[in-house]
Every structure is written in C-alpha cells, then in structure tokens.
Length: 190
Figure (cartoon, rainbow, N blue to C red):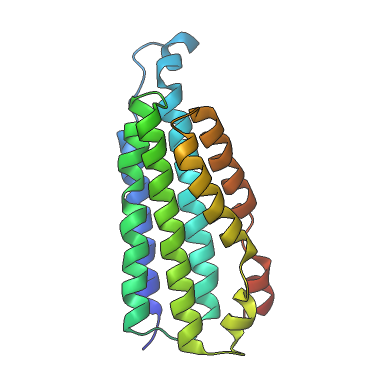
C-alpha cells in the first residue's frame, strides 16, 4: 500500500504534539527579566523537547522518503512511535513544573528511550518489508547512533536519581548527535 496517508497522519500528530507543548507554557505577568526567571525550567524543557520532536519528524520524513511502500506492521510500528511521542508534552510539562526533580527527569528519559526503541522497531519493519539490498536497507544499514543513544538513555535514567544535571547532559548529548538528519538516507533518496 502507499505511504502517503501514513506520512500525512504522522505529520499531523507531530504538529499537534508541538502545539500542545507550546500551549502548556505559561506567560510571565511582569515586564522585566526577573519575571521570566521562574519560567526558565519549563522553557528549557520545552526547547529540548521541541528539538527531540523535530529530530524525530525530520528523520521519520527521510526514512519514509526512502521507502517505497508500507504494510500493516509498519502502520502499527508507526502508531507505537507516535504513542511515545504523544507523551512528550506530558513529561515535558511535569519536568518543567517541578524544576528538574529526579522522578520527572527519569520518567522524561524513559519516554525518550521508549520513543527511540519504537523508532528502531519502525525502522526494522520498513527494512524487513523492502528486503535486503533495497534502497532503504542500504541507507539504514547498521545504525550506530541508535545503539549509542539507546545505551545513553539506559544510563541516564538511573543517573537522574543521582544528579539530574548528569541525566540532562546525556539527553542534550543525544539530541546533539541526532540533530543533523541521517546523511545515509539523503544520499540514497531518489
């Protein structure tokens, strides 16, 4: 089956996720810089979450561009990914409201970990449909960044209970390594 509806639905869900996140931001009541200070944790969490959602959207777009078709397994794998991404506004708000407390920082990492795993499941479903030697298989190959980021999330979650700054440094590092779309896919895209 064609992939157009999957792409359109995913784009719509991502747009809604970003909209929900920005609507959760509170506005300061003052007009000087001191009025913004209490909102910095929520704003910082929003920026990081926005970057993560943008990374998923961009890489999802590139991956589907390399795919020729989808099947039922891919549809369900995509819904699995969108489920975890849809929780990002919740954990973003919880973390920002509680000024980077330990449990919200760990749960934030858990949701990001599950989104990463779901993305890898979607990636494998697409490769399996298209088969070995396909354009998408050649483009994705062995994904070292996925292995590194998944391992980093697994380390960051318990570290959030030790020091949330360490966990956030890891979350930011993961975002940094994924910030540029995967060039393997761009090179092989038609």
